[in-house]
Length: 275
Image (cartoon, rainbow, N blue to C red):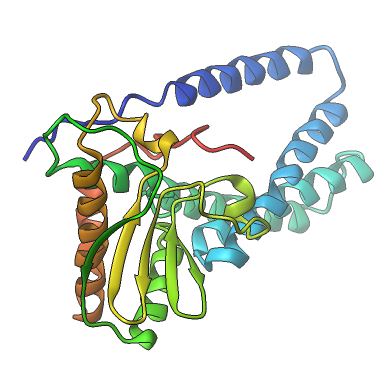
């Protein structure tokens, strides 16, 4: 069933993709005026600079797509270094090995990317939360909204948190009496070096069963209309309750099915978050 998207378009994505394409054309043009070795060296350096980020996201999430990207990036950068060191006279077996590694892990990385397996589901969550909300009334309030109370076990909740993290749906923070599922999607959050969540949208599951939800001012302003804030928070909390119940009943695959029904571009979140 068609769904009328309620979020504003992510204009940063279009801008950054344009900047990337312009930079790519500039590098190709400049490459005509420098040696092949220098061009390969620049390419290898640019690829290498992304490798620690891919490794960081893999160690944080255990999502294999980031591991595939890391292996591709390290293979490509090491291959570039060897080409320069041996002045394009590499052993054919070594050349074949690195080409094979780049083809295999590059293809796996692209598959994971375009099948949305390495896409953080930030915008899908905001869209799904807004689906049942049509009222346009009260605006933003800065406090978490109590949603309801359900039956919960700490073991199931922690397992659910690991599942959400691996599938890039939310980042769980395990506290003494609760788990906070955060949508803090800055780069530092995604690689695990930043941990504050209060200024970002989040859902809280307490071990006593209480559920509350909060949508940040920045996320609220991403909607086209001034949707009823309390209804939006209720819907977000109930969405995660639905996800939790699907998970504990052994139907976790339906969570990703719901997210994929929106068919958002793998690049929809590109540039959405800060560092």
